[in-house]
Length: 283
Ligand code: PRT
Ligand code: ZN
Image (cartoon, rainbow, N blue to C red):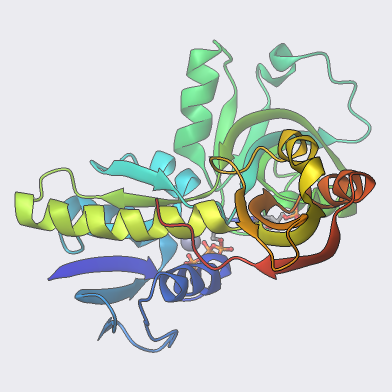
């Protein structure tokens, strides 16, 4: 049976448990457990701090894990990144106090930079030939310049609110991160096939997120115009109605395009438009 390591609490826990649930796998969200058995897929679930997940997977304590790409890059463990999971999105950026006249990356030469991600930052400075002092601190990195511990910081940014609150401005984005599925690179064929099944389920869920199932009635003579508005997964399904001059069209549309498409469909005579949530797209 496969073992998956997931974050025991914190930002990724809830989205991880809900991705698994949408994929038909019920795992306890309990923060107090270390390990439990999932329902709906033969899987042991190991609850860890996110910092420990890459190593647990590299050592084979877990076969797979779900963790931020930032932790994978920081820990430099021997793991494969199998797929991006579309949540926990953020970036790791260099930020300086608002009153600094930033002149480009060379500004960091000789400066002290506080971070909880020293490996990623050192690699970045080496690649860019910058000689800065990297100070590793855990937690509250954003206050380091104000208390005189550093000239700048390198930290996770999401909305940017924390930087603003602390009088800092983002100058360089070093990596973009999101939750990823990682696996031990040395697992046997049987486990690899199990992982492929899991990846297939996750992929279906991720692809269906943000998609809507739309059905509406349309005078038959306007079908070609409607089809040209609607490039669906393949093409729309067209079903006859009892009234011979009418048809019903079914199509999957991404929610970001929904209103624009609906407005255009109405101009070619679409009526009785139903928009339904789409649970899963299995290809
Ligand atoms: O206890 P454990 O070690 O497991 O958790 P943790 O405290 O180390 O990590 P946690 O739970 O805070 O975050 C887990 C993962 O979520 C991170 O490794 C990232 O991959 C991802 N993630 C996504 C974030 C953020 N968004 C985020 N905004 N992690 C942290 N933040 C923090 C950031 O450190 C900064 O303090 O939020 C602040 C910035 O947010 P904005 O919105 O103000 O810019
Ligand atoms: Zn952590």
